[in-house]
Length: 245
Ligand code: PEP
Image 1 (tube, rainbow, N blue to C red):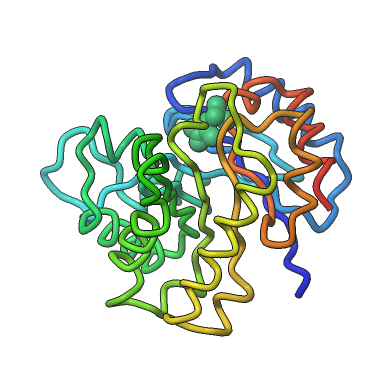
Image 2 (cartoon, rainbow, N blue to C red):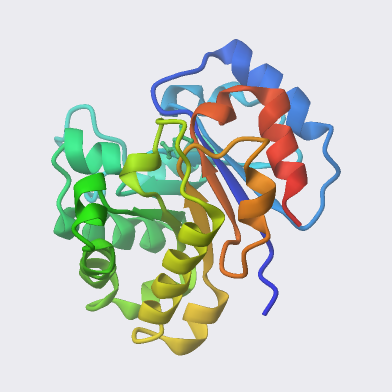
């Protein structure tokens, strides 16, 4: 099964309007191939991307509510109006720093799909969970929380496997480690919908850069990447986009 690749940039709380312009220039030079490229800047910068020809935009989180008295929150419709068509859901930093639970993440993902945004669901284990050989147990819990009660959402999802110990550490999972875990995720997803488990795009995230991405992209179950630090460098991010086929 050939799945078309997807590369997503997670700027986190970084960037500027000037970087939005530089990134646009670098990405618009790429020919519009089959690879989907998504840039997820801070929400205030979505409208600073005035001419995105070869890539889409995404939010970094959204509210599970439609609208109302939720100071500081951003709804799916507000993201859509600002130009986003994707949204990251359940990033480990939000799970940890903003106390987002599995149940809340399931509600957010459901809201995103209902509004017409494509969610990029992040899952991944901590270092101690990996050392205790609990990786599969943790991933199964995170996936079950979202898809057991709403399996139809899998067809509209992108999933990013992001081992927490690899995020921002410079220590990427090896291609073999990442492939083994992606394979487990795809197998596990088959219990929700066997067809969607084959077609769903699985991204790897965690210290991806222009040097290590090629070996990761050669793995059978890795369909692209969610890139943090290296996505703040337009030339390197464009190289990563070019490396995936
Ligand atoms: C991320 O935060 O989603 C991420 C993968 O970051 P980095 O590439 O910097 O490890």
